View 1: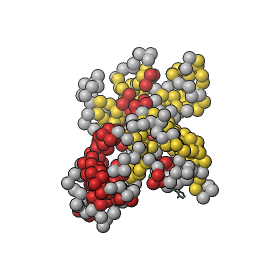
View 2 (view 1 turned 135 degrees about the vertical axis):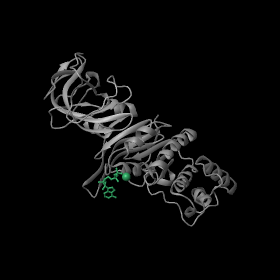
View 3 (view 1 turned 90 degrees about the horizontal axis):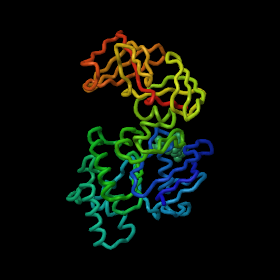
View 4 (view 1 turned 180 degrees about the vertical axis):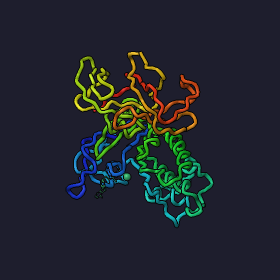
Length: 358
Ligand code: ADP
Ligand code: MG
């Protein structure tokens, strides 16, 4: 049985703002799950409904098999680490972490042991007597984590927990959160608008847009098989060429697009579609490729950006949007290729690497 079940949950603010729109989600025990989407898409609202700080307008939140509609936040087997990781400034680290257990009237000996254990988990053993203003932003964030973990929740909710940290510290903390989650084994649900953060940390991701869930899948599936244009565009870079598709049987569609012409591809979307291909799936050649398994077009080099191991090259292929290709500088079959604006090449990619998105 999943630890979290969200059934047809909606949240309407002030009668008009639909922050969360008929969301269905399940999170398994021990998962590191991410809610990913642009700012304002309803991630925090969904998290707050899980924690019990917000009441759903419709639908049901079930945790560990129990309907949460009548359960107060402090009685839920859930703890939340907030975006602005507030710690009490006038309390020492120890007192901050002990606070929740004191409220629960746990015995002093137990509190002492559990606080020490929680501080060890977040690598703050020995920092108990410090005051928050004697610590860095990253350390204060760990105090907030310890304060949530000390209650031994079944589920830990984290709302953009790393957004206040600088880039380098953020990367280090991403690894630490993954390690921490493995160590404690409890279910983590993290909210982020940063796709690389979600891809690198979570074992499954729900991509949200405008209050709705667009796709729920492991990182590799989201990247390789996005369900629609929104997901394809939000996760990584992708080229899209507009076309029209008709069903061609056997899970295939025939797509007609300018410049490319007619091509039969695996897919189900029909009508107005986008042919989508990732920049790293594109190759260049001096002569026209003859392999029937590829789509090839003539391209004229436009902007080029050199990144050491690869170059990001924009090709004008006679469409309104240029085609961008990430071309490896180490494994290219053309030796030591240097792209210069105005040069013409054949640009090609495998049909099997082409997505047909509705
Ligand atoms: P996210 O966390 O993905 O950035 P939020 O859940 O904070 O998104 O917000 C989703 C939408 O709901 C936004 O349009 C936001 O303005 C609106 N919203 C959130 N909280 C409230 C509230 N308490 N009252 C009115 N509107 C709200
Ligand atoms: Mg938010």
